[in-house]
Image 1: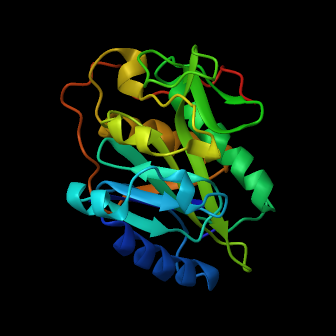
Image 2: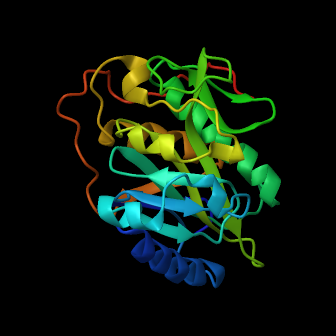
Amino acid sequence: MNNLCQRQWLGQLGYQRALELQKELVAKRTVGEIPDTLLFLEHPPTYTLGADAHRGHLLISQQEMARLNIAYYTADRGGPIFFHCPGQLVVYPILKLGQNCYNYHDYIKLIESVIIRALSFFEVRAFRQPGQGGIWVLSGTQRKYSQFDSAVAKIGAVGVKVNRANVTSHGFWINVNPSLQYFDLIMPGGVKDGHITSLHHVLNEPIEVGAVIEPVLQAFCQIFALEPLSLTTPAPTSQNFSWRTPKLMVDAKFN
């Protein structure tokens, strides 16, 4: 099973069920029952707090979350507070770290490079921001924040866990076409002022989550030197997407 990567599109899946599934797959990957696995999915509206966040970073009461039907979890991963919702592509790699990556911090850098490389397919220049987590782009249409450089906005982020057997869980997200209004109710990275955007706003044209899966898969397999196996469940199609057949801009430079 070396160098093989199976991938699965799960559709919209509740956060708790996604945690249970990851736990099952991590146990199997730890003992070598399955190859490295990528789970692609969307979550219903959900706030999650990572190890670098606390409840004060969420600017909404539990009563209001209940009224709006938004779930809330304290997550056993690194990273800040995240908001998940339909229109955001979430990717959970169940990966045995080894030849290409040996530790938690290197793994995060490689995942960030996956996001940067995948977005290059859409001719979007994505990059890291000094002193800030996540992946950033020239912003297009943004939310209302003020302190940061108004020319850039966050489009994706990483929050992962690595167990004692060096098997990963949790992962990363990319905003494709979500409603951005509920990002106003969090302090990303613990900072009140920060821009959030989506691929839809940056491109200024319609795009569906399904259009981003193949570029992410290709980027991930290139960076981690893996060979993708067939999808267990068909990925969503993107009938309104007008870009060319997925082919990464492999000549782009990445940090």
